[in-house]
Image (cartoon, rainbow, N blue to C red; front, side):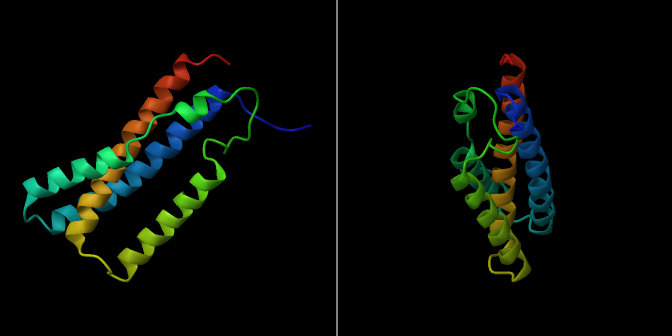
Length: 130
């Protein structure tokens, strides 16, 4: 027997994952932002651009019917991209390959996009039938 979950559970799972990831990334962004407070207005504009680039909707999950793996809110390409981005982010910060001014802007914009998308997933999960 194959274990699977419906669309509603996928949306709730994706929402929780996005919010959790977003909060963790936001913490890093804020810490680096506070350590480098120069040009804060310019940084807000840059963070907004990053937010707009990463802001996504939940249409792919909405098109799914039937039961699916609880982790299928990503396709294979999405999982590979996420693993690469996490590894790349850790490496860049550990080796100090980019300045904190970039990290603060990029992480703040990305985290905001993830958190808002996570809440949109949760909201859509409330409206989807089983």
